[in-house]
Length: 243
Image (cartoon, rainbow, N blue to C red):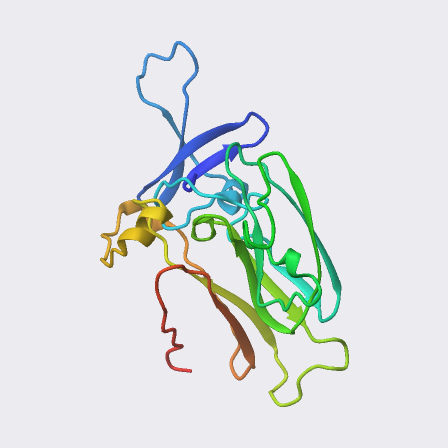
């Protein structure tokens, strides 16, 4: 769940909420406490780093290694890639598609459920093996059901081999990954895709508090933004003001 602080040791989850710009978690009071209210504890720095705040709303979602987006994978062109996927979900099958990869001589590693492979069932493991090609900014995502917009996606960057870097562009001082997507918190993705509801949602107190992504650049530096639209229903127009 987004906006829930988890204790992985005790396997407990604590709802998170905003109060005067600070994020708190609701905890159970000691047995026998006369108060009928939960305890309220500010999130620690470690909890702030681990919690998936997303848009400040509570929503069931999927995560890879407890991360959203999933871990960024960086490899070199023509490297042999081996990625082991363990399905730790209780009742959902899954596959992963490596968006942009040619999959030359390995079409069965493309990850399209029931087309190039059978899905990975709960409790099962599957290892994807393929050659990374071509170079550039790519991404991976679930290709089973509508999971990809509810958390199962990440960046897949293929760098050129040493001494084969591009010379037709300025030397990059800062390489930035910029992933964007649509997020509908009141519905499942299956409903959102079926209904195609286009409307603006009001901002809640939690939404006003959750941290936004910040990109820091230096004056007169050359910055490459690797922009990936991992959404499922809409297009985006992104601009950089006063640059």
